[in-house]
Length: 458
Image 1 (cartoon, helix red, strand yellow):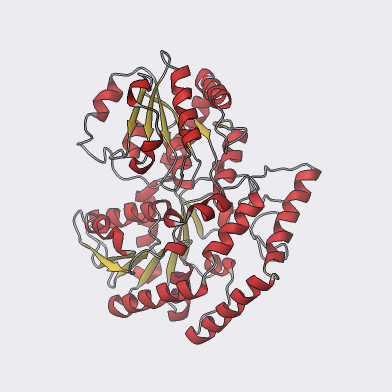
Image 2 (spheres, one colour; image 1 turned 120 degrees about the horizontal axis):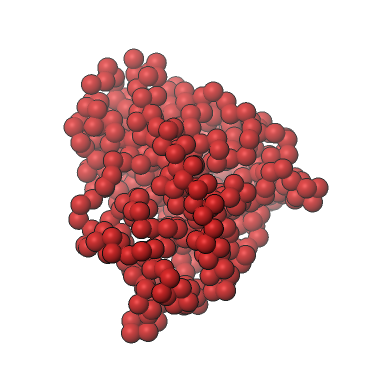
C-alpha cells in the first residue's frame, strides 16, 4: 500500500507506442493498491484504461476524440508518404509541419485543464510527446515525470545547433539515422541536419505558425516552447531503454533507464490457438510493423515471396491489419509456412515464445526494445524518424541488420538479411545479453518504485 495522499494523473496521446508503457505502469501501481489513479487520453482508449484495474481502480479522464492532424494513425495517405519518404531530413521536416499545430494543442490543453481542476493531481506522468500536458504542468507548477519510449539520446540531443544538449557536440541528431562516431562526411551531414531544422522556422509559412503559437501562449500564460525545458523541469525522466542500447554519453541523474516496460506474462490465456501453433514449430520469424505502417500491394507481395523462398526452413507469423489484407494474393497461392493474423492478443507473448527466432520489425521504440528484451535478434525495415536511429544502433551493436532499400521491400534483400541473422548465432547471443541487461534494469517494478519514492508522493 502506498502512502500517496493525492492523485497521480497519467497523460498520453493515443498512439500505442506512447500509451502502452504508461498503461503498464498504471496497472503496476493498481496492483500495489495505490489509490487515486487517473489516466487522461483520447476517448477511443477508454476501454483499455477501464481494464487496467488490478487491485485499485484506475479512473479514465477523456481528452475528447482523436485529433486527426495530431495522430499519425489517422494521417492521410499524402502525409503518410511525406513522413515516410527516403530523405530523412524531409521526413523529419514533414513530421514537424504536420504535428506543430498550436490551436489543436491548445484545444487538448483546455480539455486537460478541466481534468486537472477536477483531479488536483499531486503528480503527473506524461508521455514525452504530449507537449500540451507538459505546458500545463509547468503553468500550474505540478510536479511531473516524463515517459520516454525511445533511446535516451532522443530527448537529450538538441535539433538546434545552438541549443542546449546533454550529448557531445558531434553526437547524431535524432531522426538522422547517423552512427557514432562519424567520419567527416557524416559529421557535415549531421550539422546540416540541425541547420536545416533551424532554417525551416524562418520560412514564411512556418513564421505564421510561430506567430499563432506565440499568441496562444500569451493568452494561456504558457512558457516559451523549449524541448529541453521538459527535461530540466521534470522531477524524473523514465526511459524504457538501457545505456548499452545507445551510443555512450554521460546520462543526467534524473533520467532513469528501466528497460522495456512489460506487464506480467502471459498477458492472455486465450489466443485462438496461436500458442499451440507456435509450440508445434521449429523456427518462427515474427513479422510485425506497428500500427502506423501502410503497405502497398507490391510490398505485401514481396513479403509473401520472402516466406515462400524460406519454406521448409522457417515458419512465418505475420501480424497484418485487417484493412490491409485485401492486398494479399489469393489464399490458395499463399505458401504453407505463412500464418497471417490481423491482430495477435499479445505481441509480448509471441516475442517471449522460445520458438520465435527473429523479429522482423519497423524498428519503433517499443518494438525495438521489446524484441531485444526477449533476446530476439532483429531485421529492421525503418519506417520513419526514430526508427532509423534504433536501426543503426542495432546494426552497430550486432543485434540486427537493416534492409538496404526499406521503401522497396526487395525480396532478395529481405531474404539475405533474414538468412544472415538466423544463420549466425552471434546475433542471438548478443540479443540475449541485452535482454538480460534490460530485465536487470527492472522495467515496470523499478519504474513504480522510483515513482512512489518521489517527494511529491511522500
